[in-house]
Amino acid sequence: MSKENVEELFDQFTLKELMSKDGIQFEMGNEEPELDDAFNYNQVVNLSGDDLLAEINMYEFLEESAEAGCEGSISLGLHFRKVKSKLDDLSSDGRIKKKVMQEGTGDVVPEKALVIIKYSGYFEDQDEPYDSTHARGTTERYTLGGTELLYGLDVGIQSMKKGEIAIFWIDYTCAYGEMGCPPLIPPRGDVMFIVQLIDYLDSGTVNNFENLTVQEKKTYANVKLQVNSLFKIAADNFKRKKYNQAVRDYKQQDKEAQKLLSKSRQNLAICYNIQDIPRLACIECNAATHKTAKIYYHHGKALIKMGEYSEALTKLNKSLNMEPANQTVISEINKAITLQKKYMRIQKDLWSNCLDPKKADEEEKDKQRDKMAREFVETFVNDNAVQRQEIPAGIDASLLELIRKHAALSGMNIASVSRFDKETRYLQKPDYV
Image (cartoon, rainbow, N blue to C red; front, side):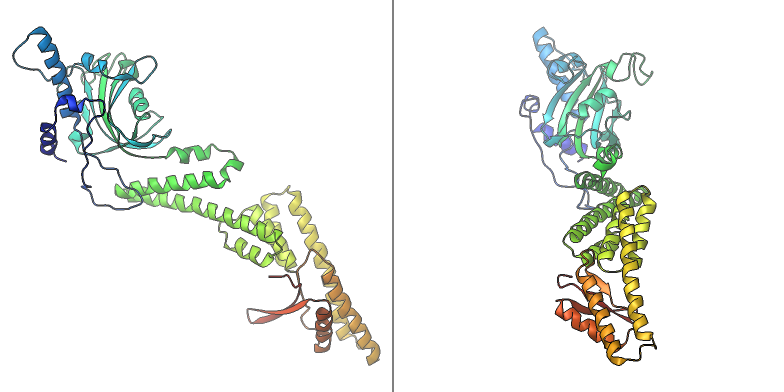
């Protein structure tokens, strides 16, 4: 909004209306094109600090002149004494005072937030602000709770809400101190600011995340807060055409989002393992991009149930490399080795039966084969740790048919899986999904 527009608005209202308890709220259209709907400024009218404070000062001066019976020209220099009397104490010691000129919405600014503000700052008896975003035609961004702002101004902004416009008087001890910085900043110079809080980003969430314990960092709520904050910061940098920073922030956001998604997939794998659905557990573990010791552990556990002992040991050993002292992982590795040895022994017996030329008696040979097929199926049926077991490749058709017969008698299934043009047969329990 131009200065001329502001002056036209002020011509329509008296100063008493502007200084009334309820104030006056102006609304205007968005003058800037939207670059990203994910991060929008709450645009409200630019109440010029110059004009508003000049109006305040004129009113106070006229009030004093009427009491003294004075006539003549009016100085627009800003006198803090009368203005201070209309402000409320923000600090307990009265060194920071505030008056809300336009109410904001929502909650007050979070701790360590990144704020987007417009402001004008004044020293006493000066007609013009010594620092003003209105004069520069910009907004400014500051992170609260640090050293980027004057202490008093930082405290003041922390009391504001989104869209709020407020006046702050700040004692020199909370501003530039005893010495000031001559010639621009006088010694023991109290300051007054008019501030408009355009918007804020809860960037403190990102910093706070780093201070959480390992267990707290794993919670969905904390990770989600961090990802959302990173997204807002990245969108803000994009809007300001700081593309290198936006790329960096979006990459960080994606990294944290992948951690969150991997955490979700890990939890799904745990649930599927508890429900004895190892195939779905493996799918979730494979999909997780941020691999952890726990993901490798539950992947290995699922592969054991599927009878894939070699692959299970590969995953479990990766988990152990990440957490060498984890006894749960070590126990699962021992379990995989034991089952692998047991079924390798059974497979060896099945192969030897097919290849033994000494067994010339066909009847005796058939009995032996039937016994081995039955024992193979019974061992699988009675093994609660396994839901699927590979049928040895290379056995002859007659032995395969005997395994099929005993599987059917025991209520088991036989499935065929093709991988890389290689067909593998498995003995499966009926609840295997």
